[in-house]
Image (cartoon, rainbow, N blue to C red):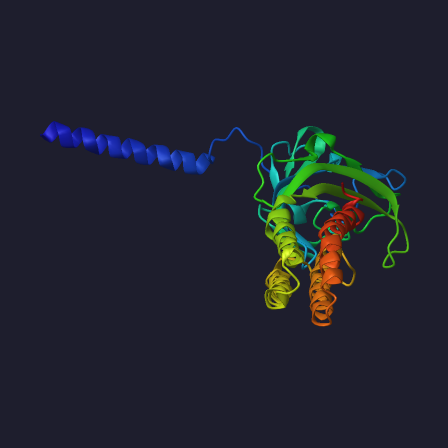
Length: 348
């Protein structure tokens, strides 16, 4: 037992001596110190007459919503930017705060707000190559053109500019490898057809005296129209067809004729009110507005025909009333087909 305690005492002494030696000599490490050299972070790394090239790519990680009512898009993006800063050549492998190095500010022109989800740091590569990788998400204004709603195709532009530099000082070069979109998206009512990016070095805004380099990310989206066909167009068409059934009722039975026509009219008005939340409130007519308005007129015209045949029957023009019903049996369907072709011809 005494030998055991003696051995334990010797181990404790050896461990204490090792710790003291390590404290005096400092920790052993294979990595260099990530100390930023003394540099002015507001000064570009390149000579005054040479613009700094910032290679930039934007990838769409997710699209959560395209809102027609608010004219917005809720999106999740990843941005990668790289540039060369020889002043940082000795810091390969280091991660530094963006405030400790020269960092060209990239701002979004679309109204809205984006939130950074990753730390605001840059990674230093070989020879002073600086890489900034960030994931941002938020809701942005997207400016939809909805005249073809719900058979529309939208090209939504997100525009980024270099805030502090004209093209003579810094320019954006497109990182083609990092431009794209993930395969799985959390959006159910749109089909994303593609994503593309382009550079505009001549963008001039009212707030700037000189041009700025602009990166434009274009998202092409096609609305999935089946929802509106089944939920709005088909039910309204069935109401229109129901209103035509009065043409097969004997004009002498004016009670059922007037009742059915009035019911059809009230039904389509009630349906339009119920479907209001599905339609964007706009200052101009869309294809859907033209369709709903035209369908309502068809139902109203069927009501007028019922009133006319009833009047003809009461003044003993029963044959004329029957002829009018027979003519309407063919004229109304043909006119409705022609009307729908005229409204939707641009998207057929």
